[in-house]
Length: 77
Image 1: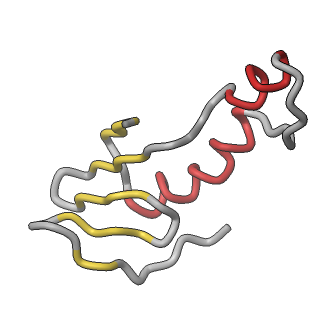
Image 2 (image 1 turned 30 degrees about the horizontal axis):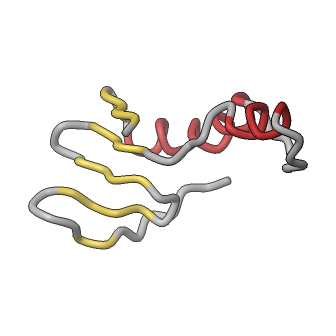
């Protein structure tokens, strides 16, 4: 995945990236939310059938964003 360069102006210096993260270039910070890490495993224990994905898959999608933004701080909300 190649991160999109286009961003939507957010409040103040924040930018919304199409990948669903907030980016503050001056602070070199990314804010991500709703990762639901482990969610499918908990639901499966309760009998629900959900597609499985791994934590590695999540970070494989985030790694290009880290490189693109030169992120030094990651906030998981």
